[in-house]
Length: 184
Ligand SMILES: CC(C)(COP(=O)(O)OP(=O)(O)OC[C@H]1O[C@@H](n2cnc3c(N)ncnc32)[C@H](O)[C@@H]1OP(=O)(O)O)[C@@H](O)C(=O)NCCC(=O)NCCS
Image 1 (cartoon, rainbow, N blue to C red):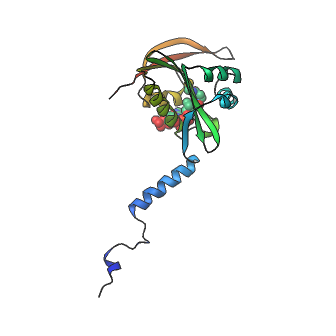
Image 2 (cartoon, rainbow, N blue to C red; image 1 turned 180 degrees about the horizontal axis):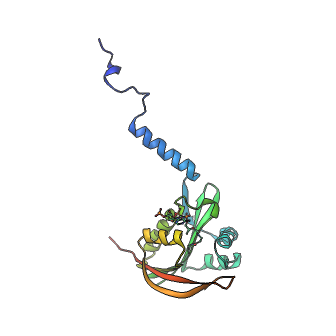
Image 3 (cartoon, rainbow, N blue to C red; image 1 turned 60 degrees about the horizontal axis):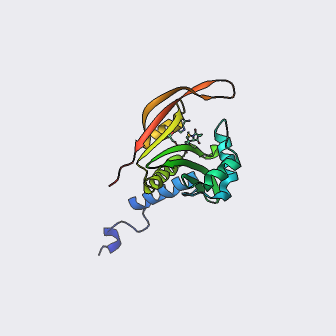
């Protein structure tokens, strides 16, 4: 008589479901764990200033972050991986509109999709605050940022010539982007 085991797949054989789980673990391991997006507090000011300085020609200081973190109309989220803060997003809200002032990810963690998690969570919180339209300005040739915003549903609605002045005197164009948040 044939054993019942022969009629089905052995329990030890990898199942399609296990392969999917394994891929999930592997991708999470490669990314360095699960990222969390949380409201930032005054305690984060120094780290956020450090991250900003590593990302932009004119960095915002710790004092500037302290002020923004204390303002009711400014929304600041930190991106945390394990115990480390590796990014942030800052927006200023006015009535039912908001402007994204800055988004950055630690250079050591770029190119792994973290900015999308950060931005989408940030947008969700803006929607929860009653924001219906979001604007931002971004350097025309900043490809990672342009792709991030394109994929998040922002569209170009304007262009500003020679808007950003570099330390070397170079002047770079900006595009103005907009996204409407819909309610269901
Ligand atoms: C813009 C920034 C936040 C993106 O963060 P990130 O976590 O590295 O981005 P992601 O890995 O999520 O990639 C975002 C998109 O850019 C693409 N990308 C990443 N690096 C790229 C590069 N060097 N060149 C072109 N595209 C690139 C990714 O493929 C992805 O597009 P996709 O979803 O179509 O594949 C990060 O580069 C940064 O902090 N830059 C400095 C600050 C800045 O410019 N902020 C934006 C203006 S406020």
